[in-house]
Length: 114
Length: 114
Image 1: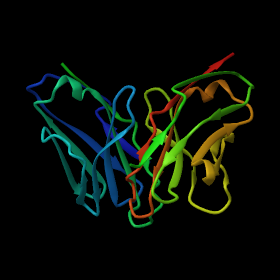
Image 2: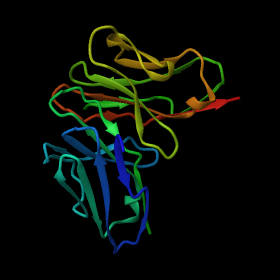
Image 3: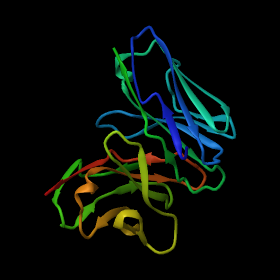
């Protein structure tokens, strides 16, 4: 596999469920990101991990919990979500410290909260 | 505040016609600038980027963009649109010290008429 892979592609969950989104990058990058894409709104940066350390948390509610066990994997753990959390969640990676800002995105996980 | 504005939410052009998508940014210094494209059900793919130097940059799929500092703009152009270009286009800006922390515009949806 190449690039950035996200699973599952689609997820439907109730407000009391606990689920996780998974992201894996095969590009040898050392920085990974979670973005939220809602209809009619700009992409929102949620979390940034650089060299496996969380360096950014953009005031995201605690019902979203990221985990980065190594430079190739990133998870987003979800629990007690709200219907307004329904969105496309995009994972991205980059080579940190090159300062080019270029991101490589996965295809996204479409989350629906009932 | 830093921001990226795409004034056109939706654009329709005929196949073979020329295309220009507008992007304006507000940033403390000259940012790195990007155009991404998102096809339905897909993640974002980088079309082109501007860091410095020549203000006219070439990208993939026949796209180009011109950086105009005086207008704080980075408009995307294509001389002849193909039906496969129908997608959503995002302009983004980032700084040299903020790897991966891109600010995205709201996106422009391009529809191509046969």
